[in-house]
Length: 139
Image 1: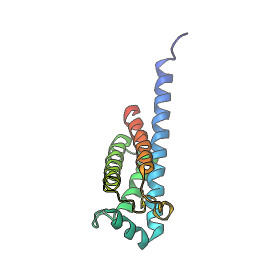
Image 2: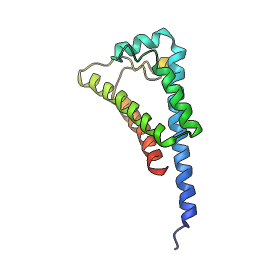
Image 3: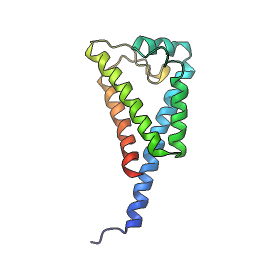
């Protein structure tokens, strides 16, 4: 059997990149929007989780902007790198809390994620990071 032509491989790769970027962008849009919708309770949860107080007020807006950039495909490589950095920081904070035996409520998606931190949160971030890696490898 013959392999598909290069143009077909390129279009499949392009489609995969677009889908991965949109899915990752939607996750950040939902995260930022739900944090804003939760109001002051999200800020309290985030600070209880150990998020730096200077970051808490701007994080939802940053996530909304990053999500929008990923969805509309503006500089997808740069946006994926930024998303991976942010996910790495979030994951490091989660792992640190788990290593300390602390399980504060996850503030990741505002009121939608009041469950105590667990390894499932790390796995979710790994899945989101995998989307960012797909974008990097296919753009």
